[in-house]
Image (tube, rainbow, N blue to C red):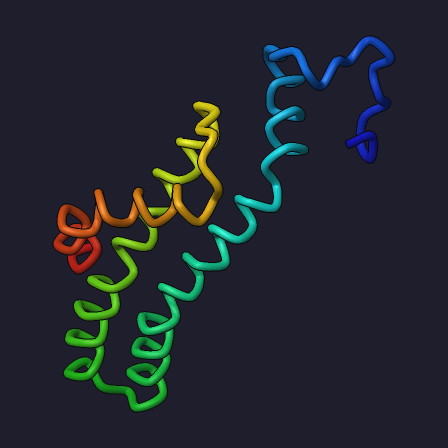
Length: 119
C-alpha cells in the first residue's frame, strides 16, 4: 500500500490500527472481497441500464417508466446488499465474502424493492 504514501516502518498489520492507518489496513486486507461485491452490484444494475438505454434510443417515455421501475426494483436489493456487505467487512466479520453478501442480500431484499423502484 505504499503507492501514494511512504510505508511506515512501525506499521503492524496484526494490530488494529486507528484513523487513516485503519483504512489502509482494511483496504489491504479486504480489497478483493469488496471488488467482487461491487462487481455483483454492477451486474444487478445491468437491467436498469439496458432499460434506460433502450428508452433513450427509442425516445419513448412510455418505455422509460416501466423499465425504470422494474430495473430499480432489481437494482435496489443489489445496492443494499453491497452496502451491508461492506459494512460487515468494516466490523471485521470473519465470514467469507460470498456468505456475507448472500446474508446481506437476504436480509435487505424486501425492504429495498420500493426505494429502488422510486429512486
